[in-house]
Image (cartoon, rainbow, N blue to C red; front, side):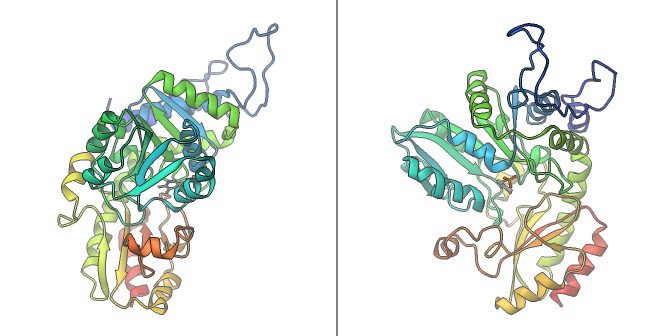
Length: 379
Ligand SMILES: *Cc1c(COP(=O)(O)O)cnc(C)c1O
């Protein structure tokens, strides 16, 4: 089945009681049982909810996985994966991670005795160098947020296999429309469904997809034991969002390409970070593992003073100054003080994330209006 058909039909069957074509919002906390421990597979809504069941089937299908699990946020999904580990275990991960992931690793899990190595995941030798008998998990993002670095998923999957460790890929930036890490050898895919999957900036949610049933059962146990489950209304919104993912993504990609080129040709812009440029350092890998290059990009002005940066960020009329990404509306963000403020400045600068970097989440408005808005703001 092709992508668009799959995104519309994945996981959804007409409701058995009425034939409703859209999965109803089962707003209930519990289910009446026929006798003690005799039920229709639904006991209590932290463990199961029919709206969530439909969404979890859709999650599995859109990443070509056997299983999907929904969480109340992207970080809750990440949290569940790390809870597979024991004190003393080690994780090899990237050095330009999403700020909230970095905060969860450093501020929450390090104190429970889990060790994280932050390395350049584009460098296979450096990944191998950190492997030892305690290595249990590789955690990567590609493209990275906000520098749009590309890591070869198949290469990391083979290193993880040699190390007998799991590979989890945060696929939020690409979305399943652009890239499917399970097909490239990853064990788990994670998404912040808050972003492209929901797509309308109206819900916080996360998910995990995987093929291995024993791994699914372990993660399901964590999901119900720790309780970070999304409510049925939020599940409905994401289920609806997924139905238009391909149409939205197609426009995100078209607009993204035009804006990346516009910025690159602008006399006041010093540098544009977008993996669709042929001279992007890992463009060949991006081309190999992604279907197109998306609407996320970052840029720096030639004038890297904070005044110049601030002027652009506060002058756009259509691009809204806000955290988050992947919604229908265009957003502009200052990673150093917003999404990535929890990463220490020296660490940030060392990894190439300057104070002057501006990130765009290009929406699906008419591109002529978006270009005019940026042109006016850059001046
Ligand atoms: C937003 C985001 C997260 C965290 O997801 P929440 O839904 O905000 O908890 C994780 N990874 C990436 C790449 C993100 O953009």
